Image (cartoon, rainbow, N blue to C red; front, side, top):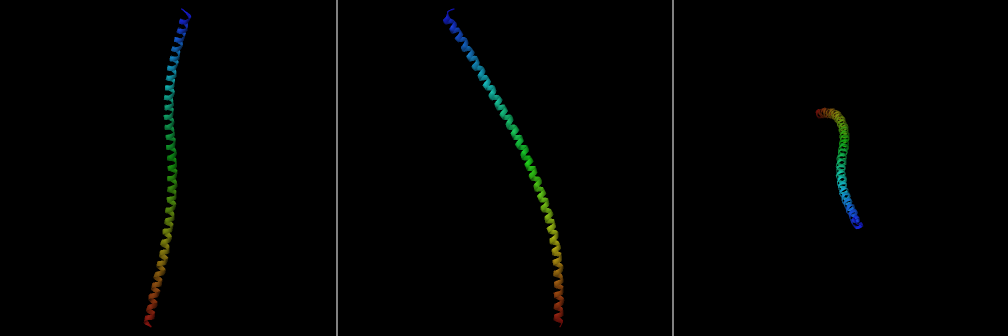
Length: 112
């Protein structure tokens, strides 16, 4: 074999190696992209789950706080209603006494 033929053969082998490496690089690129897409999907699911858990915790805390406040408001309303009833009863009793006194006094003045 002549040296030109040897060089052509070596170049041909080199070209085959380059094509083989190019295919391997292309396959690796596909695998990396596939793995990246899978990792992104997994992370998205984890983040969604974390966000869901955190939002449930926040909602639960807000609900508990609202229930506590509503219980306090209800207790205050009951206290105010009781006070109002007592004040109304006292006022009613005073009003009745005033009316009775007034009627009795009018009777006394009309009789004289």
